[in-house]
Image (tube, rainbow, N blue to C red):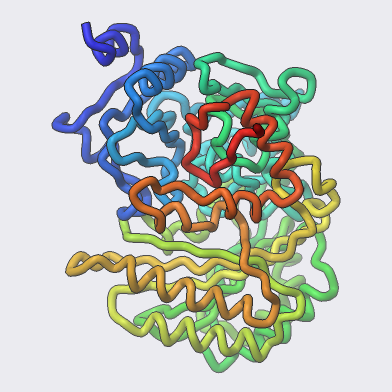
Length: 465
């Protein structure tokens, strides 16, 4: 009996291979360009399935990738000729302990499932702002959300996890058990194994919030930059949050979008953002909404199955309105060709709570400034659009570094694993840059739990010598 037949005989979930009717669906991802031709897709049912899949892949010499939501366009959840451990079909549930204020979240769950389950008890945690994103990828990479102002990053709310490591062992990671492993997964991605369950801290949350999108014509840019700069400089409260987006909409017309959040009533929210509304948006989609609808506000713009490319950086506090004006003009210029949609997002989450966490408390460093993300989507099929998308994104993001010298951003916004074929591995230098002074400790954790580098699809960490 072959190794694969042995795996099949004990596997409780579904094994999909090339030629099966469901294979195209099994390798599809949110970003069309992130799909890869896996040799095996293992839809695991439990931790034993995960362990068996890992051991089979290691014995067969297959690269391993882990898929939760499959939302990252860098193809970190895909593999060419390897084995995908797919948690999304069976390990996607959420159980809430309202008395303990904890959510037990399957590694394949989406954020919308978490939001809906927790708010039934008047609770919530720091969740992704696009709710069809998977919990695992966002949480392991740091995780920002509308509640970051009050509760920090998603990693600051991970109190425990179940993880299957490279040796096939099922381990609990908490402050009292495998504490170094808990430290490692809170920001260093899937470098240490497959997380099959997260235990997330929940917080009291009102049932309705104010939020939505407002749209401005390009001639309002200078007013918007002034108002946004003043609002940010005064230090927004933990109840607030805003995205400023440079794009074209509708009908490819240059415009500026603001995505607003206020953890209160519509009356309070509109008063809080009165200076923006006084600039007279041409569309106002803001309203008081159920909390569970909050992270679906942007779904209309960021649906699945387009080619996608993203690149990020951190916003320098010294970047001038004149520089942002030039960046806006460049975004509009780069988005002129038909078939390309460019969104340049500046994410203004209040960061006091996140930056109050010591730099070495998690692998993800603090001293944070707002994230900047250039996201380019294209459904063009007449040619490979990625060359243009990559060039435009780099051009735009490099404009942020011209004055500040900042060349690194949020790890989940890094595209590098899509630019290093065929291995699709992010260079060690990039990992050192991302994790900074925490990198040597990560090497020690890697040495203990994955010395042979079985898990290496996201900011590859080399084990300590």
